[in-house]
Amino acid sequence: MAKYDKAVPPGGEGKITLRVMTKGYQGNIWKGARVYTNAPINNVVTLRLKAFVKAAIHLSSKYVYLVSNENQSITEVVDIRAELDRPLKLNPVQFNLAEKLTYTLEEIETGRRFQIRFTTIPGPCEIYKGFLKLKTNYPERPEITIWIRGRVREK
Image (cartoon, rainbow, N blue to C red; front, side, top):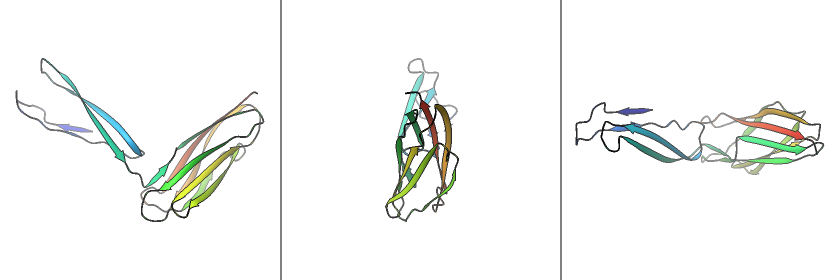
């Protein structure tokens, strides 16, 4: 979202305010905005913003993509880390791929670090998608959804 002075006199100064919505982002982000002017030279200027978003809970990935051969089992791991100075609790709420894969939620460091291991159940060729929802004790992020896509291909 941008706010700016509508008119700036020749040789004068103006003010541009850019607002970046960071919900759903974590880590380094880059955003840009173009400013169009009626100046004869440099009539388009690009402003670039770089920021680091510190999330209450850090996920190594909110997406898991599992590709395996027919009747083969593979495992993918998602790391979850508390970024606040209080213990994190995770409780599974909903998982809709129980017939395609299993998962284990392991607390690596009490209240700080967790790992979720997704392991495919060997089966026939197919494509599937679903999710795992976890409830947290952080009001800043009460729920985590990890999106899962999978493909079983012929050997």
